[in-house]
Amino acid sequence: MAITGVPKFDTLRVTVINIELDKRSMVVEGAFQDSKTTRIHGWFREPGDVWSKETKEKVAELEKLIEADLSVLHFGSSAAPTRVGLRPPGDGGIGEHVGEDAPSV
Image 1: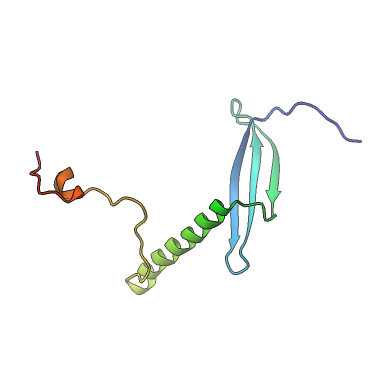
Image 2: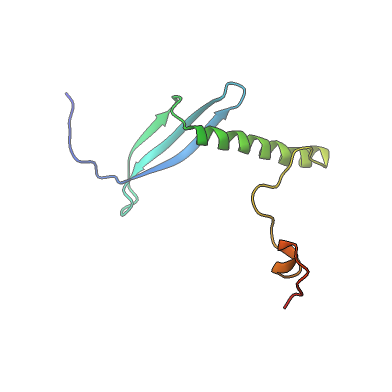
């Protein structure tokens, strides 16, 4: 007999991500949680191919970044680019970062 009602949880939390890159599969496990009490009301496991194109692209990006990190760790250098997004600020002012010869203040 099934029982129906109003769930007391309002949050979904991912707790485990298992990616098999050779099979291009990803299994995600998580919990249904009440954000006010932090009580867990149930667990879920999603092994299906329900991932968006954007999620799959980010997994592929993560794979490349991890391989670059491992290359540095085990080979001392990386053949893959490790920078994604903006470069961190260094010495100088904003002019140096945008390519202008403005003095730093």
